[in-house]
Image (tube, rainbow, N blue to C red):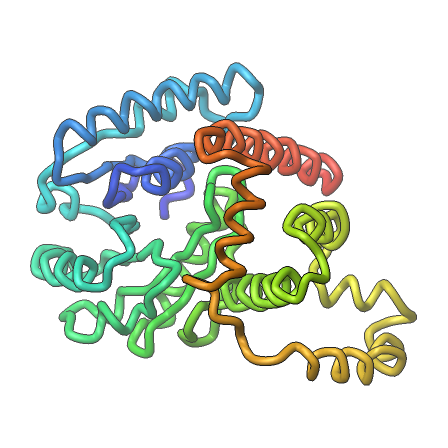
Length: 320
């Protein structure tokens, strides 16, 4: 990571939305980004879409980094040759579909041609890095950098090492994520679901139970988050919220820990969702709220909200 010219090469594997977002993030500070896909036409289309997206963000005053949209796009190239991607790359971010067999096959191919210094990072939200790194020659350079979708607007990245990942690779990855304006958190070891999904699944399980029990409907249960907890969690985490909701965390626990424990004991085992009657009812209510043909429109609304929230947070925190 050269702080003067930032001309080092970053490889991005996969030309979908996540890959394009990563490309834009790395290009925003001047890294030379090469986007790889096995289909040349998909690379060409991804670059065209990325150029237009950068221009749109610049027109709205929402472009990240100090470089113009044109200069950021000048940092981007594409290839459908894996050897070309791997050559001289200091960091490769993999964004292929969430299939373990595909990842294992791909990492074996990459392992044969990658250089010894190259850090190989996966965007996976599902698989422990040890599952696709264990048989590699360069397994000490493999880890997970799990973004939150869409990563251009949501800065969190979970950096997750395998049991063999060397400490230097973890440190360099975290530094790189900070440099491109993301907010990395580093897990001390790999664990199923990482951190974000373990917390997210706990929320999903409980809201599912509340709908299943007929306590709240889908619209109202989502309002509990979007108009309640989510409002403050956008700025403060749950533990700091507890700290501020009493005279410090010690006082909070004195007041509420027994209640938290007793209520939690009533929650029961994780619900079985797929194929259940509740799943049918939840789908009906959600499709009434957001019909399937309106999903792209609603995603655009989501992204616009996240963009404006990011701007607001940056202004409040005194960052530009």
